[in-house]
Image (tube, rainbow, N blue to C red):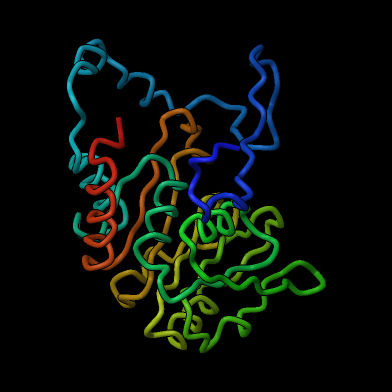
Length: 243
């Protein structure tokens, strides 16, 4: 270990990415990559003009994509944040909003703990029930920021929209981040609640159901204030983060 490494990172247990076999002959369940190609319209969009534009920096606002997503979810473009995969959205969210501490299930996406430790953010892991489901009442009136994957990974268990609303209502002064990386495979997105709760941040990705893991595009939906805060962190880190 380098003697120049900051003390706060010496005990950090990094997230271990899934193995990437070079022969590409496998359906890789460890990273949940889709075995199917992206939509034909995606392939058709890969034009020579786009290749020529690779010499240029990308639009830091990702305005065109932001407007398309805003239309899809019936929100304003100011409610949409675009980033380099949902992992980067999560990382920025921990950086921007983690000061008061964060809670998440003890069996869930392994990166939550890594992001918290990387940012020296106090965190609490709430045990799942015996059937591996999340007990929504465990997240009522916590006074800490909350991160829940819905459906949860790796259990696949879901909580309902009504249960998420109760978590939002009982934690009005805390951020509630719902990680919907797998929502297209089950459960109901809470994107429609963004206009009702200014403490809700919904995170989605193009990597799973859209078969675009290699494209590295994720996004978040939230109040204009939450999105502005994420952009403040993004523009302080890398404004050209989406190709």
